[in-house]
Image (cartoon, rainbow, N blue to C red; front, side):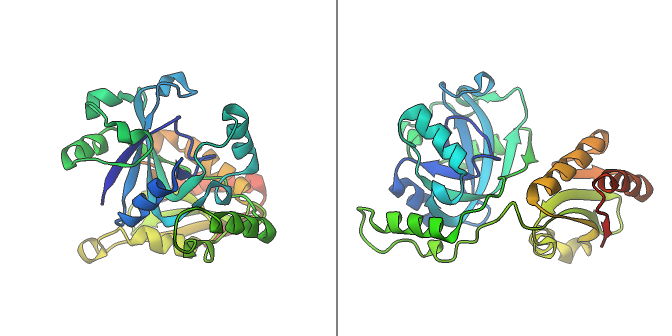
Length: 289
C-alpha cells in the first residue's frame, strides 16, 4: 500500500468523489504506480474555502485504477461551480476514489506532521516516505460517505470519450472508458446492517449490490485466523440511493453514543433490532435479510 499526498482546495468526498489533477500525466502516474489499498492524503491549501482546513491535513481517499475526465464522476453543478469561480475547471483529470476518510478536528497542521512539503505536491502526487506515511495514518480519522451517485446518459458519456480521444498525448484513450459503470440515483439502493459473526459488533452502510459489498468487506477479514466474518443481518430496499443514504445517516446518528470506528456500532442484538425497526419503518419499507 502506497500513501501519497497532494495539495487540494479542501476535502468534500460527497461532491468530489475522485482524486483530481490539472495535468493528465499526473493522473496517469498515480494509476501506473497503483498498489491495492493505496491512498491519497488531502493537504488543504492556504486558500481553501473552509477556514478551518487551510494549511492542514484534512482527508484521505483510497483510489483504484480507473481514471478519466471529471465529467464522468462529478455532477454538472459541481463542474459549473468550479468553472464560474476560476473561469475554467482547473482539475479536469480524475482518478476514481473507492473509499474516503476524514481526519478528526481540530485538523493537524501540514507542516507540523510532514515538515516541508515539496513544490511538486501542488500538481503531482507526492509519495510519502514510510516514516511520514506512518505518522499520517496514526492521526485520528474516521470513514465518511463517498459520492452522491448521479446519472450520465449514454450520449453524454460518448461526448466525454470523444473529447478525451483528441488529447495531445500519444497512444489510444484509456480502455477504462469502455468499461465504465455509471451509478444512478434513480435506481434501487439498499441500506444494510451487517453483523460480525455472532458478536455484538455491527456495521451500517448502503449499496446497490449488498452481496458484492459484503464480499468486498470480508476480503479484508483474516477469516483463516478468526474463523468469523461479516454477514447480512437486515436489508432495506429504497427506490434511490439518496433515500438509502438518508436512512443510513439517520441510523448512525441514532446509535451515535454506541459507535466505535467508522460505521460500526457495539450493542446487544435486541437494541440494534429495535433501533433498526424504528428508523426503517418510518420510511415504510422494511425488509429482513
